[in-house]
Length: 196
Image: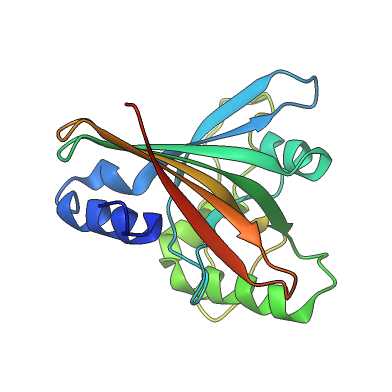
């Protein structure tokens, strides 16, 4: 197991737990603007192309955006209930909203937008999250043209991992994976077996 990369372990865990709807959910912790921990559940949207980078969609009006802009350090905690595997993935998050100046990142945002179902896209047109409800009146029905590109509130988060702590409770094995960058800017991973 020590020679297997963490991404392969994660893909295997996703596959063996695929029958459980909750297996695509994980917790994303950031540092709140007041310096305290801030945690929430998000949905795994896949890996960025041929990288180890993890994709997350969110509302640009949510509190986590201000937190990640201020401090991009974050950690994922992902537990798979059938296979008893836990992944703690630490890294930096790149926030890609409509104002991002990089055309490649904006294309990735658009690609992620169109990969979502229409009903998933409509959630970015609802009132701002976390704001008090001032009226109990029913909200008007929202519609969206399926060909319309990302709305302003749609934000793509890309977590670039730099450390992964993998724990398998069934086999009582734990591995840590740490990334290093060579002089030629190539990223590699060093794995170490540690006590559970």
